[in-house]
Amino acid sequence: MLQYARILRLKEEGFSLRSIASSTGNSRQKVTEIIDRAEKKGLKGPLEEEMTDKWIEEFLFPEKSLT
Image (cartoon, rainbow, N blue to C red; front, side, top):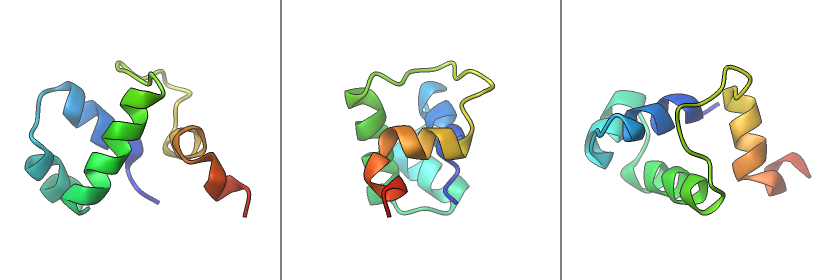
C-alpha cells in the first residue's frame, strides 16, 4: 500500500514532489495524483491519528474499494 499519510505530511512540510517521490519510492506522477486529489477533496494537514493510509486511500480513491 502507498504511504498516503507520509506523502501528504511531507508535502505539508514543504518538500518538493521530487523529494517526496524519492523518499517514498513512488513516481512523481503518483505523488502528484495523490496530492491533487487530497487538495480537491479538502484533505489538509495536520492529519488526525485515525487517518490511516487505508482510510486516506478509501477517501481519495473510493472507486478502488468498489472492486
